[in-house]
Length: 57
Image (tube, helix red, strand yellow):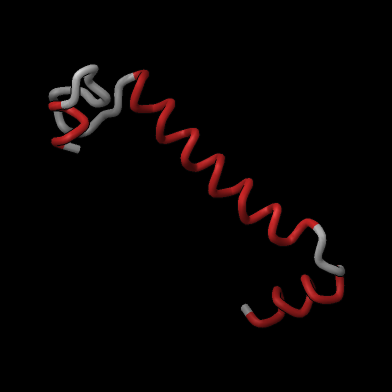
């Protein structure tokens, strides 16, 4: 968080807790890309294989 506060342009507030608008967009993009990547992994798997994986948990 400190790096994001010290970065120019700043990515987080000086309270070292909250992301600002710029930082929030980076975090949201990262989360979205991670979800998208996992979705792409399972998208083309047969349903039987997906059910089998879900039963392991």
